[in-house]
Length: 320
Image 1 (cartoon, rainbow, N blue to C red):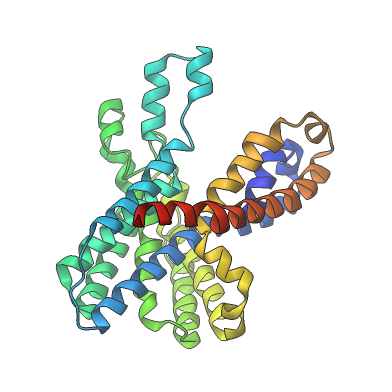
Image 2 (image 1 turned 45 degrees about the horizontal axis):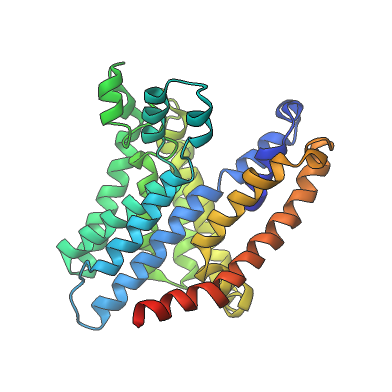
C-alpha cells in the first residue's frame, strides 16, 4: 500500500510508456482487493467465534461506532478544503464531487456493515456463507451493467453513485463488496492452504473463459474481479502455508494498527513529502525510493507512539 501510493505520488508520465509499467501497475492493483478481502476475512472470523460459542450475533453500539469512524475517515481524507477556501471551483460542484467519491474506506465500512446485517439475519454459519456467496457473485454479475442505470442523468448518477463508477465512485459496492464478502466466507477455511489454492485456480480459469468486454467500465468486469481474486487467494495460501509469519511481532502490530497506518501514511506522502521542494526536484525514480523508507518508518513510528501513549490515555479516560 505504501509502495503504491509513493509510486503514484512521484511517478513520471514517461513511465506510462515503459515496458515494465504495466506489470508494476498490475501488481499494485492487487492491494485494494487484498485490503478488502482481509477485512472481510477478519470480520467473518470474528462472527464465527460468536456462533462457535453458541451465542447470537448482535450489532452492538461499539461495532456501529467503529464502522462509522471508518466511514467518516473515508470522506474526511478527501475533504476539499483547499479547493473550497481558494475559490478555484464552484462550491456546490466541489461538494457534489466529494459526496460521490466513494473511496476504499467508505466502501469497506459499508461492506462490513452489510456482512454484519446478513450475519444478524442468518444467525447460522452455513446459511450466512450461502447468502453471502449469492450476494457477492450477484454484485460481480450486475456490476458491468450498473452504469447504464443512470442513463446519463446526473441526478440519478448521484443517487446510484454507490453502485457504479459513472459519477466519481472509486470503489463502488458493485463489484468491490465481493472481495470483502468472499473474504468473510473464506474465513471458514482459515489456515487451509489447499482450499485457497483450489479456489485460486478455479477463479483464474473462469476469468480466462468469460468475456472481458461486458458493459463500459473496465474495473467492473467479472473477469477483472475473478482474476484479481485468484491472486488474492494465492497470496492467502502462501501466508497460510507458512505459519511462523503469524508470530512476527511486526505483522501483529501492523494488523492491530492497520487503520491508523492507512491514515498516517497518506498524510506523510500527500501532505508532507509531495510538498518538499528538494524531493520534488529529484528524478522521479530517486524520489520514489527515498519516499518509501521515509513513509514506512514514519508511519510505523507515529503508529507506535499513538498505540503506546495516546490510545491508552483515551481508553483510560473512557473507563473512568
